[in-house]
Length: 495
Image (cartoon, rainbow, N blue to C red; front, side, top):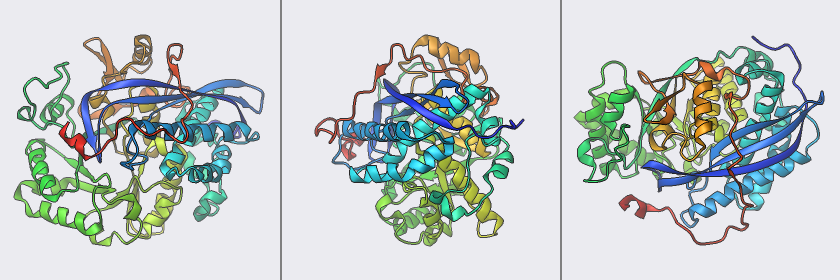
């Protein structure tokens, strides 16, 4: 039920950042990187409401190398310093901002965030990262102080979303009515990611390489264990190799009874639209891929971001809808992509939850005008169990999406480095979302679905806050980032 109170004005009093290392239980290859370990950022923001109440809000997200900036000249450590710098830019601006609504805090500082990042040669996706974390933490405070869930708070427009110059294309769009009409889904299909080095069947695993932790490792084991019917398949940019691998994947997916849904993710591995058309034509010509082709819903960001929005995508869009992901660096990227024939855009909490809602508003407006069929898709950035995955799930549920890519539970070992007491607290507070397996708390997927009822709790998708007593403070960003450290490039494929 909506809360009949005006959007509160907020003042950010302080921002603290922490980070937690983790290791993956299995390597995950996407684009130009094979991931075996990483860092999760956690922010804690202290906020005062205009009625004098104060509190803390939290957000968490992976410090992901080689996605926000795929420059092969930069090491993973340099990529992580870029993201730390983005948090620092946003933290300074938000603390200096006057009292305002949560949405105005984001919107009034958006251009400053992007300009400050450009001056440091940071890509737009990097620029968005810091504000995205702080915006979630600020909304978390509001929800906790007024005693509302994220879904209730947003449907009541406690963020104060309204027309603003940074979204001038929407004109005088009625956000209050739009938000009030959203109906959060209470369960969602989990779309399993098949990375570029993932084993498909047992024969793909060399002797002695199994994890043997009681969890599925190969694709056929995933299907048997979780009952999933939605899959995201990574392709590499090598047409022959991609077709051969897809044939192997199809040999497993073809055995699934009932509906099958597939998306293809190019992760910017193709140089131009013609190369992707060649891939699709080769797929359609392969008899073993007929069911997989028929099940393919859309193709995600196959072309490098430097050229993806330079020309029309029409030659590919005639076969399947195409969406942007890495090209969604600035708030108007979807508007520009639409003019080139793209039909959709990814929702990722790491790019900002306001961006997802603005893009959903655009879809509603454009679809009402009868100009095509525009949509959002829920995508993952290896979100970790706990706050990160729950905030993203709360967002995609509010958007009303039918499925969401989830891969963190497969590649990351549960809460991976977080205190056991914290994991148990999440299990108690969200027993529909987690289960205990061999002494470890993990995401619970049954019949291919995630249950989301417990996200309707006080806070931004989580009744539990991170235990930061033993979590390391985030070090200041080295700027400019020092050279050296591990670089992610094509040689990783041989590791």
